[in-house]
Length: 172
Image (cartoon, rainbow, N blue to C red; front, side, top):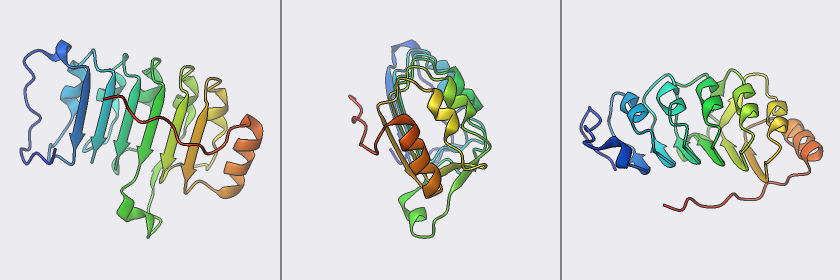
């Protein structure tokens, strides 16, 4: 948490790490995450990279929260996270007042996540404003959104019969 080092630490036994929280650290990159093949839970605040490729390598991940991913524009790598049950992507709370957002090309990759049960997109919005790809996530039980156009949110909830209930907290 709030590690001032610019380099992610070397992990001696990467296969022994099953949960990780990287909270507002000053790392230049989180590319080393890709080595943590047994990671089941990951929380990151202030994701420094432009690509989610390192996260996309974590195929055992069941829980993912990224708070503040301002350089990311493509969610494609997340489509490889077939074990993912909970996904939370947020902008910083300080961005809420000014309605700043992180615009991503599409949510299409998320539609591939057949085990996804809980999703929250707060300030992370698709360029086309559409939540339609999430309708392919047939296991969804909860979905919450902020800064997506309200008519689209209403349409999504009507189509899926979901409500904006909170998902469960992580178990780590």
